[in-house]
Image (cartoon, rainbow, N blue to C red; front, top):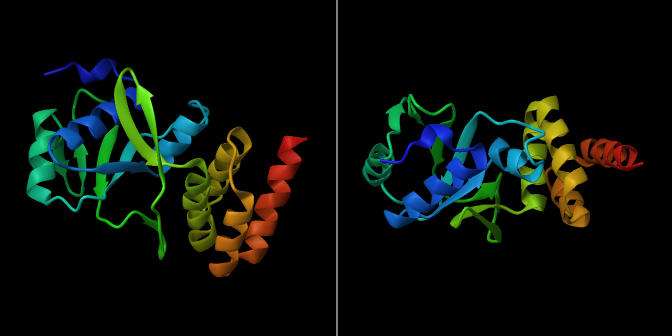
Length: 180
């Protein structure tokens, strides 16, 4: 078994994604881990959240992750040699009721990592801000939007559908202020 303790956050995410794919599990990285990648580690997530878009069974996922030393503890998987936990979320890949079809694939040390596109990473973080008033999630959305090209019109349209017009306005103002 490979020594995962030396892997960076990005390397571990790519390794797990590729390992799962080899076991028939198509997984897409979401959540704060995408923020870590899109902000080049300015934000540091302590976990790796994947959506099991293939709908593989828990038994298949448990066995695949056990192969690389991650064992279930409640709903997350931990490896005592690694500082990051892993969570495998059920399909579909979505933000609220909005299903996501487009993903990004990056290569990390010859390993393919599927993750949310920057626009959807921003929407994912804004969802936590909109629905739970999570100010840390707002900050994360601003960090991703300030560091990557995003489709701000799509974010605005989605925000209006979610009934968060005023919170989106605040997000946009903060984003424009940060770009000055």
